[in-house]
Amino acid sequence: MAAIDFHALGQVVWVSLVAGVGVSVLFSLVIFGAAKAGDARREGQDGQALAFGALAVTAMVVFSVAVVVGVVVMLHKG
Amino acid sequence: MSDVVLWIVVGTALAFDFTNGFHDTANAVATSISTRAMPPRVAVSLAATLNFVGAFLSLAVAATIANGIVQADLVTPSIVFAGLVGAIAWNLATWYFGLPSSSSHALIGGVVGSAFVAGGPDAVLGGGILEKVVVPALVAPVLALVVSAIAISLAYRIVGRRRPGPVSRGFRLGQIISGSLFSLSHGTNDAQKTMGIIFLALVANGDLNASDDVPTWVVLSAATAIALGTYVGGWRIIRTMGSRIIKMDPAQGFSAQGVGAAVILSASHAGFPLSTTHVMSGAIMGAGAAKRLSAVRWGVAGNIAVAWVLTLPAAAVVGGLTYAVVALFGADEAGPIVVAALLLALLTVAFTRRLAAGRTLTAEG
Image (cartoon, rainbow over all chains, first blue to last red; front, side):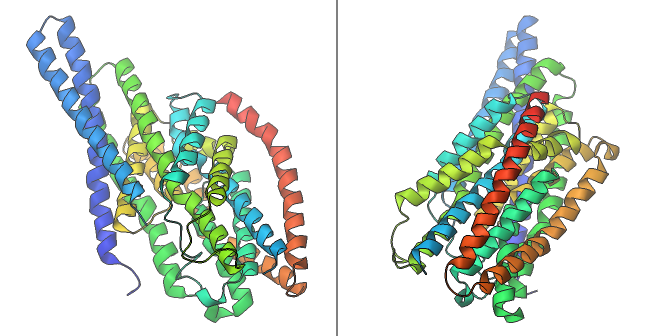
């Protein structure tokens, strides 16, 4: 069993969990924030629309950073 | 090595690259096509373009074929050629049955078989197979399944009460991003395998030194072969991954693809490469199982798992038999010429017959 790199395996498991769940949650927040902001705007609740819009934008920015990190990782492997 | 054998190895490597492309198209586009995030032709065109671009972005070519799995000093052009034939045969067989399987494991299997016939049991390193084939094949689908199940559960919880129209449109847009990331990653990774094989053949033939840069024509031809293969598209595999494992909605499609990309890139970062096919299949199953276990067609999943178990031994048998036939003709170029001509004839027949069926499947979506 010495051939198996358990350190790398452990790293793959936890990074995959954080990155995989993180990416999915972030994009879901983008959709949730955008949808709620639209609803609030239609109902004339400008404060809520702004807050949910900010949530959507923030989640989109973090999601975009994750995509860029992914591209950097793929360019620096091997 | 004669120039004839060199060019036969180069041609066979590019043929493998092509099958690698069309076999793995499904990983990038199956979920997008299934959820109608993109029309089929647009999806494969985007995937093909990004595979082509990706091949130029990372030129850290694989140093040796099946490194650490067979005795490196035993590897000859004939062994590499026979291994490539084994991998191509397995890719074609699994494509015919619409089963997603790992092209990398098929290539390893082919070389293991030909090295075994050429050098006996001592030519194969069991520890390398355990480390680079068996353990990743066990880890990839289970990890992707679990992460995908958690991800889709949270996604449903977040967007659950929103109107379905905007939610579906949003996740479809997300699928275009995650699918593009997937295709780019595939180009940076899988085209390098072919470049590595051609580069080593050129070094063995005395045309290049090991320290030289990869020639532009090698990069261009490998990028073109994988992009063309991706564009042709393995539609039977796309249909299996897109609609036969689970019937997916856009949220499931995005979560499966997002998790798949995250797992593949995390594994690359940690230096523990996992099969793209194993990861995507597991992620799709996880996205379905989280909704309800019966949403996954476990019979189809079982067939896929059987194909994964058979990949290495089946490619090894074909690789070994091919090497035995090549060796019958002695050390000159007659063996590779005869086998390459047979392979070319078989490929021509297979593509002529299946291309029409592929178009039909495309039209059906």
